[in-house]
Amino acid sequence: MLRGGTEKAFISMAQALDFEHYDYTLLLARGDGPLMGELPPQIKVEILPSCGDMFLLSGKNAYKTISESIIKPHPAAVLDVAPYFLRLLISRGKRAYNATKMWIELMKKYAPEYHPETVYDAAVAYWGDRTMFYMIDKVRAKRKITWLHFDYGNPPRDDSLYLPYFEKCDRIVTVSKSVDEALRSHLPSVAPKCVEMDNILNVTLIRRLALEGESFPDARFEGKRILSVCRISEQKGIDFIIPVLARLRAEKYNVRWYIVGPADEDYKNSIIEAALDGGVADMLILIGARDNPYAYVRDADIFALPSRYEGKPITVEEAKALFKPIVCSNYVSADEQLDGGRLGVICPIGAEGLYGGVKRLLDDERLCDKFTVRLSHEKFGNKDEISKFYDLIGQ
Image (cartoon, rainbow, N blue to C red):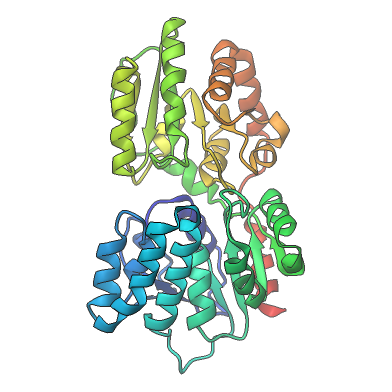
């Protein structure tokens, strides 16, 4: 239960559930994270007894994770693992396919079934594709529903792996119109299963938290503060920020760009090195992960999300709820989130587009005020979306 966008969206949904007529069990791969304390107490929490770390499998931790989760308790599994590692080494063009295929097959064979004696009324795979794979292969339920938080087509995915699992789901919940359209266009055969359902946003809590906690440490800074709340990773386009800051410095803008969020450490180190080489290290402030990022959003002049790709990022919805001028890259749902540019600036993906979008807001105070006023008249929360969830269970 990390403080990521998907996890925060889940918490908001969980807090809107009907506990009088339904019983809920939440199966977690690991029972930790800052959001554990925000789960409604009526939800029964269980931890996957083994193979939980496989849900966090990546290229960097693959050897250790597979060794600890699969091979150590099942020594003969080395015979299953070895061919996949060999394929990963020799077929670099199909690494994503081979890695996903390996995960599916290892979990299918070695992960425990979830209460095989129980048939649930409904099973929901909320977190992502790996939870869908596990739900289909290891959970018994009358209805199986998966959530799709990402743009299926970006980065590209192998239809031969995903299609059979989507077909075994009774419903596929897509979190935005654009995410829905992307899946339908790539896999037309699953279109009848697709149901669009917006993430639920706990606006009251967000605005209360924005009045609490710490904010920017450099209180005496008199320039413009640009803020990104996201993971420091390649997906989020943090490397685009460095040349933007270099150009703004050359043009005498007094700005600092702050990032609140956890980091992929190797990528973070490359960003720090690039900032030093580019002479903008003093303009880029890495705050780190914070349980409450909302006071930073409150005090920022501009909220920016320069991602290479996204589904429907909840951080943008949160910034909208706090009436911030926003600039974001043109990921799949940007047009939908910012109403075609009526509620913020949408820029082309990349450093050049980001520079243009940021500069537009820095140069036009009236435009920033216009976005703030428009956002103040918007309706936020979408708590009525929970009715769609019960329709899915009842169908």
